[in-house]
Length: 541
Ligand code: TNX
Image 1 (tube, rainbow, N blue to C red):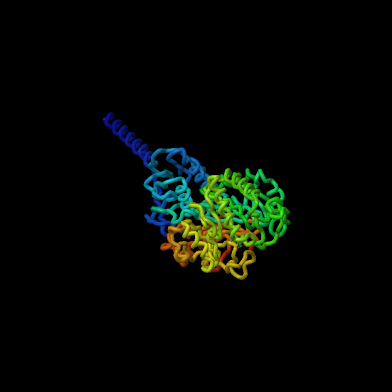
Image 2 (tube, protein in one colour):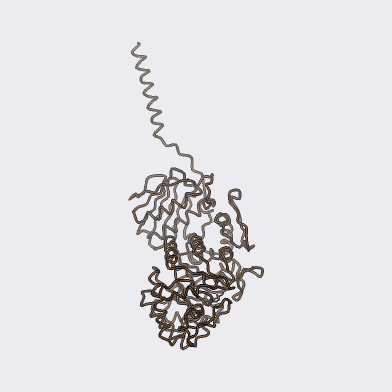
């Protein structure tokens, strides 16, 4: 009997131990909180979205796994992006296949065909992001960023949970060139300002930043073989301020910074007009051999290189060579606009010669649409900036020569136009450009007879006659440049202003968290979802 009791007791103890130890093995999963991917507000709008009605929770146990060493920088970028607001230091690990559970996996796959496309699959137990190239992973990450609560953008640790709606997103851009242009010549805007702009542009999947590096009022890039360009030519700006310039080291730093965010820098040296800063730095570039006076006003069309002198082409060859050596991107922009002080036959000869110089340094030419007067080299791109259809003939000439067009119609894409009569900074020569006007157009329908095959993409220029600092820049660029980003990415058939304005309005929290000094247009239903955690930015303009 005694033995019997003791064996029952032993049995009970063993059973109990087994049960408790088994329990330890079982992972208790919190029930997933439902979230609807279709209610998220992604800009640019992705090509397809499928919701599965649940969510993935990013937490302190999450990890970022990447398929091969080449993807380490992007895994690192994601981990660092998520750290400040979540407080999680998510480990990054190389793993040749998708982990079974709870992690974010970044991989490359030929099943994604577009070189900038991505496929994002979000499940309760993990996130799978695939792309053809690292650029696509970067874009998928920007989408992921927009699926997290807006306070993910804050720099201080937040205490909320980090849910991402589940489902699938397949996405790729309509156009390969999605750009912004910044004029650092009229007012010099330094390294930190340009980096900040790059950060904000990359959030909306813009992939090119064109820097307008020289104009009548200032020369902004160090050229070692012609040092007076910056010591003298860089020392002025509109209004008589002290100007400034990028050293070659700083320029290279910018190129790298942009590259890390999948943005290509396109440097512009504007010529033969818009050249007073160079003409005042080197007398030999003038036909009369005399240096001009520095210029700090805002007129255009009065300056020209001397197109008959050999020294002019020696100078241009040196400048383009030094620039090309520091520029990994395929394009050098040669300006060519508003050359009213250059007779047309000289202008044509000049543009033909300069295209050859650019090709000899292994780069392709981009130029404002007037360059279509010349004989275009096979890969030259023509940037359309006309304000109305009477000015379309340059674009037609370009297409006749089989050149592709970069679309920057002044009435839609010029970020320096005022929003309305009350806007304190900006110009109005191309009209007033409210947020709806800047969005409500499409690249392939803008010029009759110029269709998608002729167009490489879109660029939004910001000329800085009235822009003195980052706050001015942000006020004119945002939110219009966000719409331009969507015009370049999302198929026209999937866009309309009524739907877009609601989505844009819901980016309020993100723009506030990023401290962007955007214009709070009355046409946009700005809507906050997390007012208590978001730091709002005082508006300055
Ligand atoms: C025209 S657009 C210019 C610039 C001015 C701008 C001001 C273009 C190719 N040239 O020189 O800064 O207007 O909006």
